[in-house]
Length: 308
Ligand SMILES: Nc1ncnc2c1ncn2[C@@H]1O[C@H](COP(=O)(O)OP(=O)(O)O)[C@@H](O)[C@H]1O
Ligand SMILES: [Mg+2]
Image (cartoon, protein in one colour):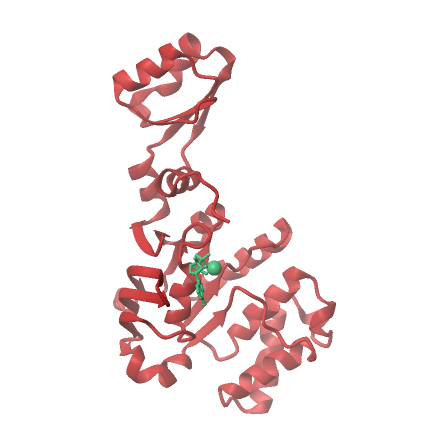
């Protein structure tokens, strides 16, 4: 339904978060519409967690305004929280409880009757492929299983909005794909999703729209494919040990590029015919042509220095 799609699930304006003199989030604004998956993408320390913590009411905003489901967060937090499911970055399952008990205890915070809670918890655990582990202690589970329990737990109150902070960080490839598959299914069922990630493949696969943030500010916003087209183009040529002539031509043609001394990365559109132009004449076997990706956008916008 078009009208539902347009509904603003989150409207965040000029969010700011300071810790003493340090500003973790300087100015972040965004909207999330019903049924959409919006990704907050950014390097370590960009302010992703600080932003989503304000959105799910874990940490108060220093300034800015936040409306969720059309309601002002400051005035209606109690109502709003009933419609949100949250997977925090760190695993916060209760290690003394079984998988099922973790969900049941959580359900009690939402005043869900016990019988209904148990039934729904089992359904959700099955949905997350954990039906064989309902009675296991949480400490016996693998990292991937724990993450799936956290997601199942976040769904116990049948939220309209699911917020996930780095849902697959640290998981092995099989577990990541399994989580992605479930999140895609949830999205196709109409759930609105806000997620943070620093994995480009995750962002490109799951998100309808992305906001790239760094140092507490929004750098760019748009659908993954538009961001790639707009900020890097279609083709990328990487040249090992570029020579003077090649550098000269790149400058002369005014092509977007990065010169990393021992490697040069040149960005262009289809019409630039980068590979034809460069490969035979200037770089022998040292040229690699590939399609531009979100990772190129990310590195172009946030730079290459390490963020530890
Ligand atoms: N409670 C806190 N006190 C002081 N600084 C914090 C606190 N939480 C986060 N920060 C700092 O704020 C910045 C943004 O952190 P965070 O939001 O966790 O980034 P991200 O999730 O994008 O990696 C980092 O420099 C971090 O060290
Ligand atoms: Mg974080």
